[in-house]
Amino acid sequence: MSQFSSRRRGSHSLSHSSPSGGGEAFRLSADAGAGALKLHKGDITLWSVDGATDAIVNAANERMLGGGGVDGAIHRAAGPELVEACRKVPEVKSGVRCPTGEARITPAFKLPVSRVIHTVGPIYDMDKQPEVSLNNAYTNSLKLAKQNGIQYIAFPAISCGVYRYPPKEASKIAVSTAQQFSNDIKEVHFVLFSDELYDIWRETAKEFLSQFEK
Image (cartoon, rainbow, N blue to C red; front, side, top):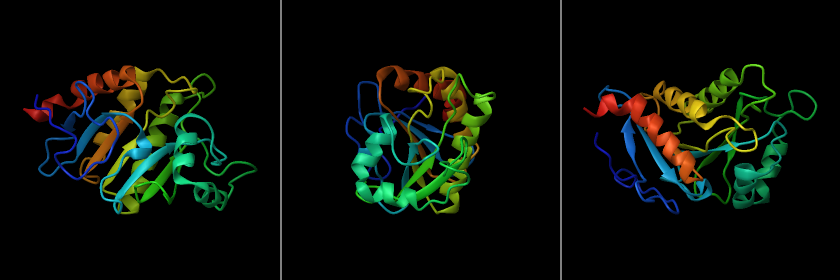
């Protein structure tokens, strides 16, 4: 299977974008002009392509006012304008701006990308159908990207931190959902914060996508 640097197309900016064995890319389907899936290990707040048609996905909570992990890092990097923009997102019920599995979009402010797409993944041990909720989080994020002219999108490993989603199961949902948008989004990136997650996502991408490299 051919593997190539994440910098071949576009001017991707990302700290640690080429770790040992990193930066792999995979075709999302056999169709002519199909999009690519790209893997990185590093800090998602540093990722960008063109600052115009790119977006990062925030693993938010239902209040959308910041939190720990990726959520807190994105809010810190974007500056206080992001939480103010999030406050303006209408609540669908008291304290809930983005229910689990749904997605919302805001400007990115001090981040190098154009937009932030906020989605809420399931808490694995509390969600009755965590696989459905996680699929919805990825699907609705990609739908929102498509609707807003986003051609390059970067995801973290949604729900794989304090929400305790088993990473291998999560990676299968992430990669298979990205495949469904192979003709809509030019590049779907996953920016993973640990070697363990990176290796799991790479293994799953090879399982699902290596057939398209032949």
